[in-house]
Image (cartoon, rainbow, N blue to C red):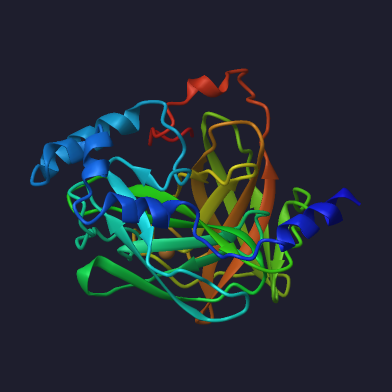
Length: 321
Ligand SMILES: [Cu+2]
């Protein structure tokens, strides 16, 4: 088995490091000069000009952008871990900062989906998904208890909006030493089971378009009609591309209390996938006071109108009906 050989090689990794981010951050130093000089974004403006920042972010968002989450540094912002090591199976106080264009930690964040920062952690084989909400300590340090039950290569995504700037998702690698046994990607399926709950996924992922996805939640075979609000919605969906873990833009259709959105069994989302391929979809929903995650594998469908991936603008919010 080739897989077994590869696993053996990974198991030889002894050091636990967080990609190159830590080293790069240290080299940049507290002044962040390197970051400011290399930045073509608001960093070049030397702080203050948050309005310039907004403008430039908005402009960048209209370009056929690189999907989110693939970079540790973008638009002058950088993710910097403060924790050196996460040991397999041990609860760790995981800390990190977001370094801003002026080289100092960002302390002001705009609330999105009820939280100032969302931290998604997933192993590179698309297993072990966690959606966490770290606490902002003084000095722009984020802290969260993190337990990774299995060894392997993980990706951590910080999804946030600095005050006065556009939302951003930065990603960093997290390596957990040990015997890494990557799991084969699950076969695409319409249903996912989590505890007593079955979630059914309807809708086609069309590359380059806004795709409507409907997820229906049932418990013990009965549709759930009393979902509880979670993150200002009846569900939260994260989509990751298999192959590089690009973090895709997904947003819910409607919100609790808007007079038209029901608390289940259906939850509707709009997802934008940039390319053909296979994606991991993770639905967080809350029922009976507990948040659960249903994980899906979904493959893209051909565009029924024959258009290519270039037909989408990547970040348009004009929904296809
Ligand atoms: Cu969140």
